[in-house]
Every structure is written in structure tokens, then in C-alpha cells.
Length: 139
Image (cartoon, rainbow, N blue to C red; front, side):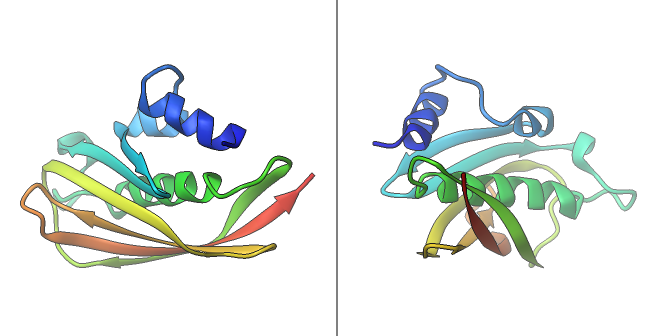
């Protein structure tokens, strides 16, 4: 088990704090198994855009943190990463309720990783789909 994987497991168990931006927005790590990461949030008026629906950037935060956590779980000691590209497809408007992002790595090579995430609402309907390209960094 790498230090990254241990940190993710400790985060899931509540022994360490996760990414502070996640705390700010209200994101929770709720699952980490076989490289699949699950994050949740309770969407409400504090996350709305001026039209009264969930701001797309909040959905990006949820998906990006889930995909980034999945990517971190694949890293070896001495590796890091940065996101080079994030693509979003918004499929359904959300006003409030529980949202769940499920993320996995589609491919991880020596220099580039590809991740995907799906966000569903409390009724299991797909709200948005995301893909991410990550560049692997070595110290």
C-alpha cells in the first residue's frame, strides 16, 4: 500500500482531514475500493447559481475531487500529478438533494492518466459525466 492509498483509507475512516476545498463545499469521501472512489454531497441553496439551480462549478468540484482521489490512489512513491484537462457534460438540472460521484481511472501510463466520473442524484438519475486528463509528475 502506498502512502497515497493509506491517506485515502485514513480519510475514509475519519482519521485525517481530506482536501480543504471539499470541506468548504461540503463534499464527503464515502467509498474507496478497488480503485473506485465515491464522494457525496448534500446540494442546497448555498450551491445555487443566480437561476436557482446548482452551479456547474460545484458539480466540477465534486467530480474533480473524486477523479483526483482515484488518480492519487494509482501513484507510486515520488509521484504526484496535476490536472491538464477537465471535460464536463451536464445532463440534468439540480436544485437540492444528495449527489453521489463515482470515479475511476480508465488508464494510467508513465506520464498521463485518464479518469472518468459520473454524478447521480438521490433517485439514481445521471446528473453529469466528466473526464479528466492528468499529467504524472516525478520528483
